[in-house]
Image 1 (cartoon, each protein chain N blue to C red):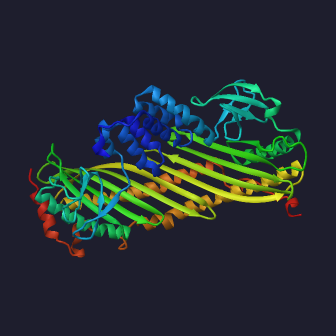
Image 2: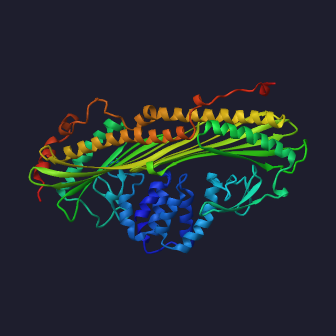
Image 3: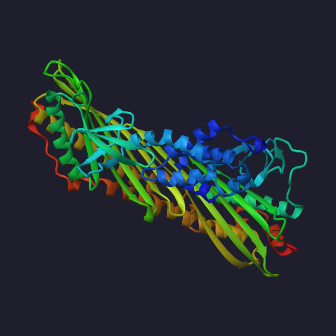
Length: 249
Length: 306
């Protein structure tokens, strides 16, 4: 399994879907682990009832169907799919509404979906929240999984694992094909009082995390790859060029 | 995909998968991928077959450079220097290296025989270009290697016929301890056209970088360009061609830098703003300003029972 994750770290991000398929076929016994640990580009489906789009991911999947957060129905329909409890469903609907606004504010477009479910073993609930912004030349996809464990009456522990997948491509005459993509994963744990509600706490964590990740991607990752290129071949200020006269005889 | 967990892929399919992973390894990382692939396949024989097919392709495409066993020089493993199975010519020392692809070493060397080398006429041009390009590469690249080969017309004895040389330049920076690797590869086809007395130059530049500390970010950029100059003496042609190469490569580097500096401003900001338009963080506790049901939210927070 460790070897599989090693492979995923080295394969070009644009091939990550193909790589995951290949690994799933070679290691069927590890499929649960692979699917939950390897992030894939997010796809969307349109909810037939509300006409709104929702994101497909591991967290709203049961067999080959996906549950829409808007109508709480499986697409394609499933007889005995898993559903969150009434209480969680209310929180989920609220969360979806709030995050839609959040998404709009930060992404000025894009799609967001929140899924909440109960973890069997513990008395906690998990929220997964996928966010997808899409531009002609690139895409940003974020998945945040928060595990909420109530510690006592007044506080809860929130464990957030976030991954962001980014892809930027340009293709023009002067610079040829340029493709920069990647994914990073981070974790954050916090104990917060619940007086303002879970949604508030989770929302703040997600917001903080996304900002950090965006900064990270920008400064560290893109900065580093650019630095590498300049190390390979330092910019021309250091190189003397002289045009010979013979060319223009 | 998940419903067919019982059907294992066939041996052939497994080999293809292993080959695919190996071939897609970033510069300098194929041995790491090899190690992980062996663990995932759990079948030595299958791995060996896949490696035997994948490594030569990878080595040639990445133009790796190997030392001769007696340290008399280096040879670049490229499609242009290949003269036989696992045999690669180094025109500078007129030696042929016998290469072990999977272990990425040169096993032994032998002198090249006359049929394998170009004629003196061609060699004049090849040699002159080699000198100029080597000088350029040593100035422009801290750790670059290059090679010039004749790919067409190596038996041309005197003026009157076309021939073609290829310049390959490769630079790699490997820093696995810093989780960062990168490579630059350029291939320049130089066609000497006798009738038009013209030299046509076509270049393919490929740059890659991989940063993988707690993540996996890769750059993959490619560029093609063309130019031409007059067909003159070996030294003058060499000088002109090298100037062309230098010019285009420098231009390309500049355009890469421009692309990078445009990233934060244009593209990135369009995907996700640093802050919402309100210039403040999102008001989670007070989303009623967006007319939502604040009360339910508070109630849910308090009612969560064990």
